[in-house]
Length: 61
Image (cartoon, rainbow, N blue to C red; front, side, top):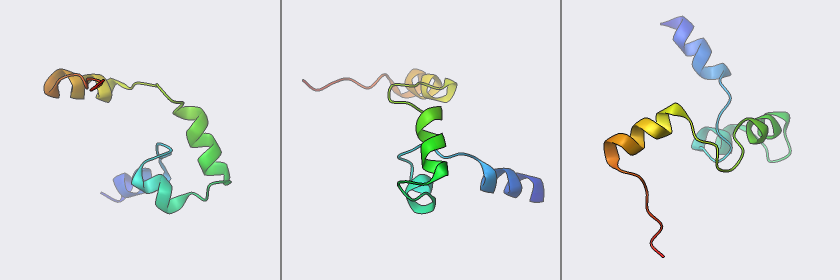
């Protein structure tokens, strides 16, 4: 269990996640790394699974 806590505290958050808003100042190194790792439009395997289970989001317009 302590190992999972260590991984959880060291992980890099997505730029607009609550963790990133709480932990990263806008001009910090962590915020810049998160923005590089998760550019707009990047999809993860988990996003694909969520879309499969819940349906793909549709643009209302």
